[in-house]
Length: 318
Image 1 (cartoon, rainbow, N blue to C red):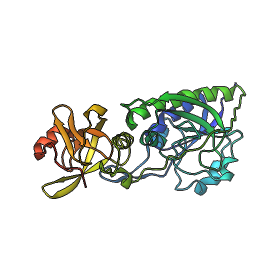
Image 2 (image 1 turned 90 degrees about the vertical axis):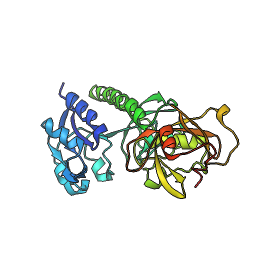
Image 3 (image 1 turned 45 degrees about the vertical axis):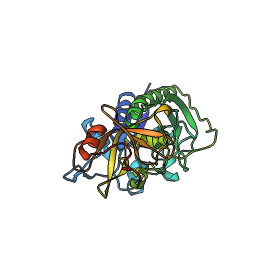
Image 4 (image 1 turned 90 degrees about the horizontal axis):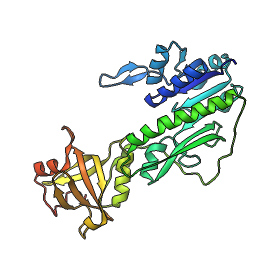
């Protein structure tokens, strides 16, 4: 049986395993990635991870600034199926009509929940306890096309964006592999999405500025977990009359019995090997590891001792 002729659309590191799967199981005609950009400390013009891997595999690559720039070149390629994973660009309706079967997308949520650019981070920020992956057919709307299949997984209290990506990437590979097997056997599934949609917008720098006095402990902890990938979570730290934004590396929701009445943003406790217990708008949270500007990440209790913090200080009230 001849292999499916495919085109792959992807850009970052997380897309690379999907390109490799497609290379192993289909006849990849072309790889389309975002254009080369300045990267790293030296800001040298560098190809994205998908382009680099595609070239290593000997696959033809296009990296247009916009898909419409190379529409004619892509339209000239005979392909049955498109597969997109974190490509990062919108497909115009005329483009979706090019492949015989359509274009599939692997999305890291259980659609219609968390439609948008940051479903993994927003699943944590929005307090979800369960998520998964969706393989669906791209339509002109945002992540609203019919589903091929979905797979679910739990979000554990200790998960952050890094560990959740580590769960979802192989789950998505499993889902895409099953999808390709079914398509190759002639089975095409198009199940309409059901339920109330929720959104997962791209995170902005201001989203990472977290104030304990304005957030509950759960909200702050969920945001810190979600922001482990993306803009770094920071809290305002005031000491000796000066305020700086202190980056949070690791947090932990405090049990209810450790909470006590105090001004929001004040230090409830400093404990060796646990960190700084901070009062929030509701509840309290342990800052376990922090990253002061210009220094290396350190245990929060070591930071507190170095700055002379003590119980009752309003260090995070601003």
